[in-house]
Amino acid sequence: MHFEYQVYEADFVNAGAASSAIKKTLKQLNINPSIIKRVVVALYEAEVNAIAHAYGGTIYADIEPDKITVKIVDTGPGIPDIDWAMQEGNSTASPEVRDMGFGAGMGLPNIKKNVDKLNVSSTVGVGTTVEMEVNFI
Amino acid sequence: MTIKQISELLEAKVLCGADRLDEENDIVFASDLMSDVLTLGDYNPVILTGLCNMQTIRTCEMGNLDVIVLVRKKKATEEMIEEAEEEGMVLMECDYSMFKACGILYAAGLKAIY
Image (tube, rainbow over all chains, first blue to last red; front, side, top):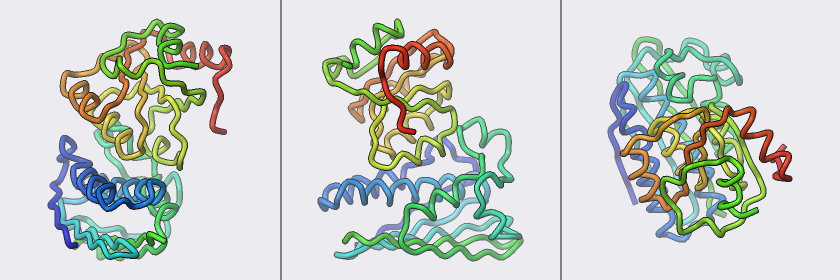
């Protein structure tokens, strides 16, 4: 099963819509609730990141019998130092993002904790791609 | 402790989910930071937060957290109540500060996750 969702810059009103849709699909597929939670937490953090830090992007999700693969491709400023961004507490979030209850530098670390595979690639001035995989078994 | 008892201890106003007040929950997590709320694994504690916007409800939805108390006199919007209702959550408003609300629940025997 393949799904695609668009996210838009600073569209906090709809932040979580894609994650919520994936959650409902995984529930219908009777995936283990703990695994669903890991997928959804990681995806939601990534979705908020694309809305908060980039100019928008696309979420591609592929559900296979044994795993889900999600790729979030944004156009935006990119991440100059991915290792720095992966450390808890490091953030470049705006006051608006902080008002939403995010922006404490926990997004990427939270994603890492919840997925089985993670790859973050970024080009400054172009955008960032986050690829993640969670096994169902 | 039942959710009803929690609401009474906090003198909280139940905005939705009144049909679930007999359910029990003995764990509490308090935070205004939604990324922290997303680190709780399989726990389903009562959430105390002073963050009052749609992200509060959405984050709890993502984390399967379905009992939320808004502290510090924060008032939920109609949109928040509708979304919480749709997700089958219990949503409450409490006029106490975070410190007081946590203190009352801790003194009443509710537990922390860590």
